[in-house]
Amino acid sequence: MPPGHDGGMPITPDTKNWTWVLDEPCPECGFDASTFTAPDVAAMVRANVEHWPAVLRRPDVRQRPDDSTWSPLEYAAHVRDVFRLYEYRLGLMLTEDDPLYPNWDQDETAVAERYNEQDPAVVGSELASAGASLADALDGVTDWSRPGRRSDGVSFTIETFAKYFIHDPVHHLWDVTPR
Image (cartoon, rainbow, N blue to C red; front, side, top):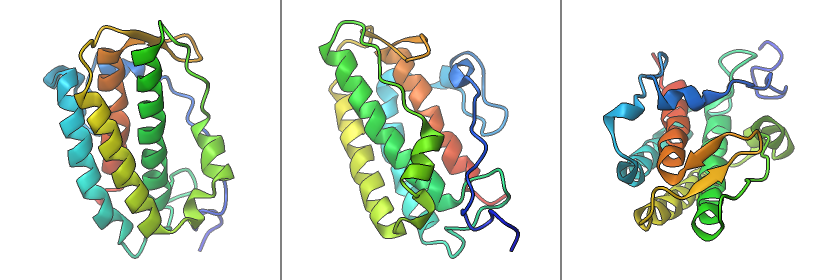
């Protein structure tokens, strides 16, 4: 097996600013933010969560398809952490005036937390719990216009935040779907 295909080496960090998915469809996964409303995101999270158990039972769950792509397990651990992070950020937006979110380096976290060495069953359980908790929090939103800012200065309302966020788990499920 070539070096890195077992998840033993770090992936080159993704430095793209993905906020463009709010304005145009993703040419890779087909995500189109214009086709749904922010209140739909909670149901989209729940639907996304339902697909991950099958992914995490795959025999190749720890195998990277190439040296620049995470394994299915790494993607699942990332999605779990994204659900947790966005629930935290949503909480800031609901309780503070225009909060600035602390920075989060997803690639550093993947290495530090050894995503590819985690137990797939535990990741699946934690992903389901984090997704359900975030979906419940989104269901409770009554003011979608509250603002918040990322550490790079990008500003969101809860509406744009929700529509931006959901692309991540949708895209990563597409990433791990065999074609």
